[in-house]
Image (cartoon, rainbow, N blue to C red; front, side, top):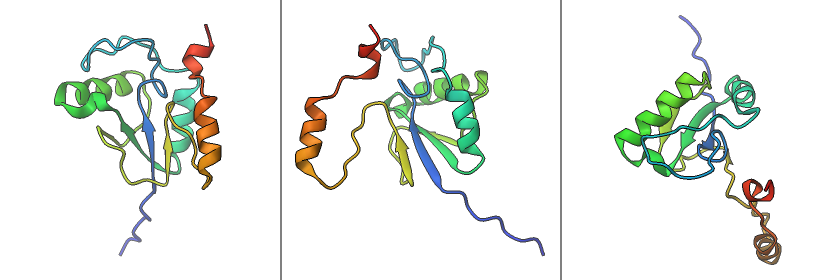
Length: 122
């Protein structure tokens, strides 16, 4: 009898602005942008230890979901699933997030200091 491999935990990763450059929205089924520098290599490393679920509002219909799957495949970036919802996971990677550390005053301060990285490169 073969041993059952332990199920890998999930890391959920946002698509637009995290894996794929995202200067502007075109349409759910049209992704004419390049991968963010280092994304492919990072996801290859993550995929050795975790399942990768890509999440994006773009995937809320079959056209958008297929576009993400095709883009990830064409760019040879590993993933296990694509969804339009944040799945239960051990970690989320998202370009539009603030880490909550149990202190709402600090969180409000963090919000007031946010400057999105794509806007800070102008």
